[in-house]
Length: 481
Image (cartoon, rainbow, N blue to C red; front, side, top):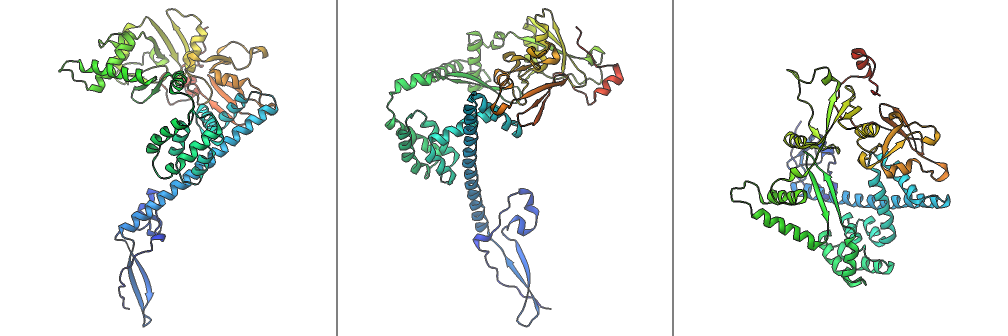
């Protein structure tokens, strides 16, 4: 049997496969796609009928690169079309909820909230985020139809739509918005969202009838301060304020940072941030920002501490200090704040699950409220993170229906979810909730889906069950009053 080698030939560009999963890169050639230098052996029959092995080199790097780029562009185009379709569907769901509410003469806002809560729980997302997406989708379908069509055709991306909707927000009439779209879409199809933003601002000025001074007064009403928690005990504090004030604050903090001595080891950004903290908390740039905070210290006391098991050779040193939001606080800062605190609160926790079971302190007004606040920490709607101190205390079984004012029938709900819990929706639908014990709430949606929300653990948790507690120290502890 003889063999002969056939000259290498290039694989056609259009048939080069591109893998979608990096895990298949070590798989067979047909699955993972060709690489430069790969060979394929195909047995064939020669002129004399003998078997011939033809060795064919496959795609060089240029073809692989071009094929992968085309695949990326195609995938992104498909994603853009699906995102536009999702926007249409969300807008349709929102309109359906509003129409049903109008037919039943109910609150349209509650109907949208109900839709967002049901969808968010199925997706394990925040209902506030979903409600905002529904509202944004309805706004996009109504105000920017031509831009949405271009997005669905994959002629533009989500970033282009965001720029057009953001910059064109002041335009009130449909005619002005249509003219705005017509002027910007040709640019959007040929340039990036960043460059489109500058073009959009110029076009907006040509279409606006309201003077800049009036627009600034309206925009200034939206000024705010927000906090976004990050990892490692850090957060971002944002100010939405007029540009003149923002640049003035930044300039003053920069001057204060430059006034530091040459031996100061901090960077310019660190000195600027420290100066702003000092000014905001104490009014003086004297590196004493922490002294402007009066802490209320909660001391977590698990039952193991009462049994004398909190120290010794096997001790882990306990968990780090935390804010009520759950953010970690480094030990040095926690000790400093605790030393200056005027009020300390003892928090007793279940040693198995880590849930709060009792609270006391030097002065304890409204003891039950304090226990609930320490137990819940947040709104008890599944996935909601609103702080308990800003939420309502809700009777799970309403007072009018015989519900008692006890820890087993109370839970914190933010005003948004408190209103939804008691609302009657279209066709007599409603949300319901019951307490399963130990602060665990089971919510049932109008469509019959069940969602369980447990209070966040505050103390240490052990890998045992309720039987473990009963087998070691007797029945589960009850409240001491």
